[in-house]
Length: 571
Ligand code: PEP
Ligand code: MG
Image 1 (cartoon, rainbow, N blue to C red):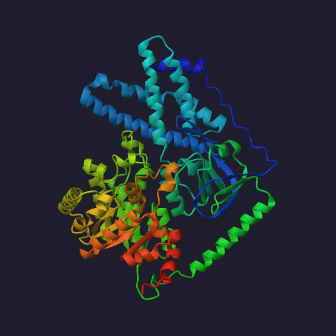
Image 2 (image 1 turned 135 degrees about the vertical axis):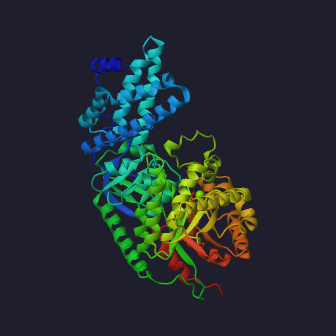
Image 3 (image 1 turned 180 degrees about the vertical axis):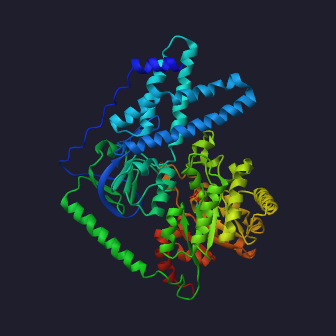
């Protein structure tokens, strides 16, 4: 097969791709409007992640050496995965059947295959994903058109190899590694893992053609405080090219290509106003979260990575109310080990010192997809195999995370929170697994804290309705209003077309929160809110009146919520 491959490569040089989008001629200002996912303004040069080609985007790379390293790194992970698969296949189905995986390794190591990819990266300054796809497409086409049926089937192997390489490229800081200088990132849409890896030093704003305001892309933009406009439409992407000057107004959802002097001045004025407002809010740092009549409330921070700890500490968060641990998985190209997770949890707990840290266990599925989980494509992913459902059906995975959490628990004040709960049975099962983990650690003489709090997210109507029973089983509740709204109102949070129906202030959602608060308190457990609604200051008084004990918000909103609390009187 390799010989054939060699001959094909020499006979059929990979053609350079042609840049199909013309550079935008800057002769007049153009503007577009989308939805504001995160307020704020920015002026900068466009960095465009272009055209989906079977989900492979092509973009310009300045540092091709770095890009080649990404490719070699993905190649070596892929080869070690294939060696493991080969060993398992030999044991399971015999050497002959396992041979195909050796063939995949040979192709991946084939000098001419590798050189074709490398040449494309170097000569065309393109990303590794695109180079792999272009080379693989060419080979695949050649195999597919062969008369011999055995050879035709080899096209599928090429697809497989390219797919594996690309999977292992993702999670390697794809976007952030390729951005140079300060840019406004423009794309069709960003995945949650792409969003969380954005580096604020480089990406001063982002604009997407599609997307919904309740997606994790939007939530993360807010939590990272990167001005973001989404749902601008595909036309915008057709109009811009890399390097175009853009002005972004995240308050109004407007973007200007090649802004004129007047627009720039207006945006710069808004920027100055933002800085003044921020300075005013900064005066609230170190102050209490106390109402005019003396009622206090905890205000904690939501974070998705260790990087965001700094923001939480900077605004004086009273604790971490939601650490979205799934981003450890989303940013990685393989299952994070117990040791890797332990290091991260320990760091968060140590950084927060005496303050409470609520770490949510793995919540993937729906829009948070991790390629190496190989989850089946589902018709209704939000109603599907996600979050605790994955953990309870894959206890080895769950236990690895719980071991890391319990081991880290001696370094601070830990709460472990479980997502997507719908039943008493689930909580019973979770508690049994936690006990097993603790027992194993004791037998291995590994210390853990006995003070770890166990809590659940109230983010399904089922959990809210049976919260009287659930409250007897846990130490705390935290309301996930993003999902609670989606499930109560039957409005897919990913679907931008029905956003107008997803009324987060809907009486049904508020009544469910109130019910959960009443049941929590009647059973002596505390209740917080960690969904986006916690930062909605028009509801702060309502939440205080319901008796909510804690609000957990993106660090960027923390001082605004404190400000709102300090202006309320409950008398
Ligand atoms: C929620 O659903 O409100 C929540 C906090 O979790 P996530 O947004 O990550 O689903
Ligand atoms: Mg949720």
